[in-house]
Image (cartoon, rainbow over all chains, first blue to last red; front, side, top):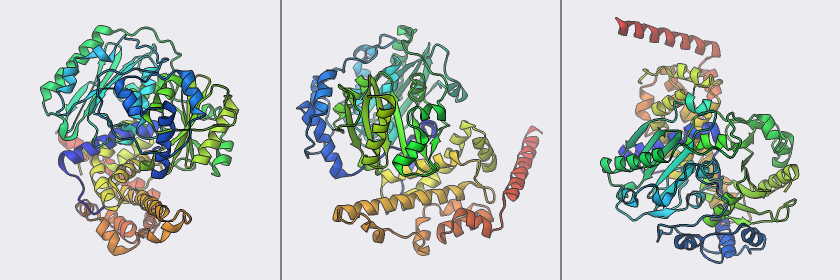
Length: 409
Length: 187
């Protein structure tokens, strides 16, 4: 680029964001998910908008999104794929939102509406923020299963207040995003994972720069993280940030300990044999036309999200020839159909039909032109959510159908 | 270079043995320079983030195979960053070409900037000249051969008559220096 590189706080923020991504992705995301073309995206937005019969952002702001699973499943296979305009960031108009039934209950009994005084959140910014669905917000960027879904799947809590601009930290910080996210991850019955303890996590830290703040703490048996991004909108008042951190810590501490987990918690990373159960490596090589493809086993950094994803047995599998890129990837969220239906409200998917999809099953495809040429097919297998990505849409669909053939629709 | 957390060779060994904390040290040490270089060669800011992150992901995954020429990992990082950057430039060129002509998906090839143009390659290094200037002589030569003349890293190492054995000797010497420094501190 011809412009000069960032310096000072802007560089610090950029480096901090990339560092966090690297430390997490070396373990969990061997290659960034990518999207295809602007023209295609416009088509994507439309399918779901037509499916809902109302702009997802507007529906969300009004708190009317309830999306019964049967309704969504029915329209998802029938919705037309007509061109439309890209969705625009929508400033939230209310502080309430509805969620799709099926989300596991918070094991701490926490409610985002009462977790903290909203004034503590709004006081951080010079622009208006309001409660927003964290699944929808995160799904507005990229093509992966939103990280927060795993936290919710293990009975944790994720609360977000923002200006309506979607952001997914997995893909970097959105410059126009203003908001706060609070995550609460319950400790597994067997304790924090070895990977977490190796990294000295849950860390006890709180720091602010001019444009962002970050805090992490172990509160009883919970791993609490709080992040705030605001660019020029973030008030640089350390006492305000600390007041929010203190309030969240107190609320979580008073709510704990967590109720018993209702899932079988996984404590170790999957191996190649686990991935072969999803799609045999030879079949991946054949479908992707990639000779010598191998299972890519990640290793490296850790985070509260990675911990939740491990506990939820949702680490996923990647395949590639070398470590410079991957030919295919499959992620999943057990009992995650509710999250998939919530993701649809991000207005970034087009319904598709897949060979082998069972009656009542749902499938859609989404791409993100900002990250290259990769697309992902999302589909339900029973009550599970699978996310199958490859370097082009046709290959992703072929892989998804292979998953269906292997696991059943 | 602040070596209080170990030399680059020692950090590489820690990475190769699965020490994730070393990854954070490597990032803190070299990411500013890699980011500035990526800024010069990337088509967009979004590409910069992807290029830098992929570069550091690659150093983690290939730590056991990486050969440091003299003392610094920076030349290898910059070469890897350059490779990712060229991929991003090609993708951007293809994308632009497809927007103009859907019937010619390969049409972007002729608009890809070829980075073996020495003058352009030197210009790409404008934001990291200070870091390169501070490198040991052989590391600087690697930067010249790879980033300006366009040689692959392995070929540059071969031309400089470097071998894995020679690198291991350098690692040993680095450890000896570190041990000596610790002893002096204790005195």
